[in-house]
Amino acid sequence: MSTHQSIRTDAAPAALGPYSQGVSDTASGLIFCSGQIGIDPTRGELVTGGAEAEARQCLRNLGAILAAAGCGLGEVLRTVVYLTDLADFAAVNLVYAELFRDPFPARATVQVSALPKGARVEIEAVARRKHAPA
Image (cartoon, rainbow, N blue to C red; front, side, top):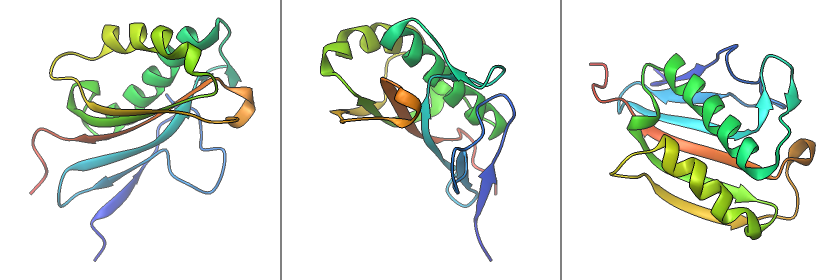
């Protein structure tokens, strides 16, 4: 019997391909969120305003997926941030510091040549429910 379940919410953009917005492992309580770009789920378009606005929307989208799984940004253990330009690192850090609290999640940040839909920022996350289901 599988211990993982797909997570889906209309409060975050639909997957752009054959993958889940997130997957929950019911045995461990771990939540794996697919990378989110700064798409506004109500409009289906990338937000304007550069890397800072995109990072904020990425984290809103991740928060919506986590909420659908029964947890929130406070339970995030690790993120990976993808930037098309490392010059945006400081702007993303500002948003990150607004939405995460100490102890901050572990994080990797990497520069990539391109992201879907011309996005500048993509963020993925792994979280764990405080109380994993029995």
